[in-house]
Length: 151
Image (cartoon, rainbow, N blue to C red):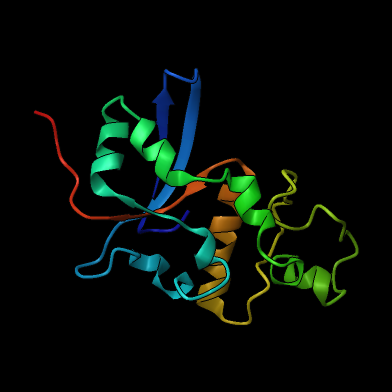
């Protein structure tokens, strides 16, 4: 887990399910927080932006507005990235004797040893976090705008 990322579970009683989510904590004028380097990448294109109000409603028991803003499920978002940009770096370089078709996000069997295929260390670290989140069915998004607190 990386500092600056929030992992949460949201109870969606309407659909009798739990929404697993991951989103960055904003930094001053940057809603993408530590995920800012992903913003202009193919991976960043699969990370929706939701309103702070929708997230607040979800955290207070009304997830419908958030659910509507999230769009495609995590696995579909992962599979929307071209294969050569999501297959494990070591599998691509033929360094891994265990390489298999499940060595990419969206397979729902992502191995612990997965390494995001970016050459940039920061992008690789963020890619690893997003890939694992998507593979476990966790929605990844960025929050823009203020949230509210019920007292």
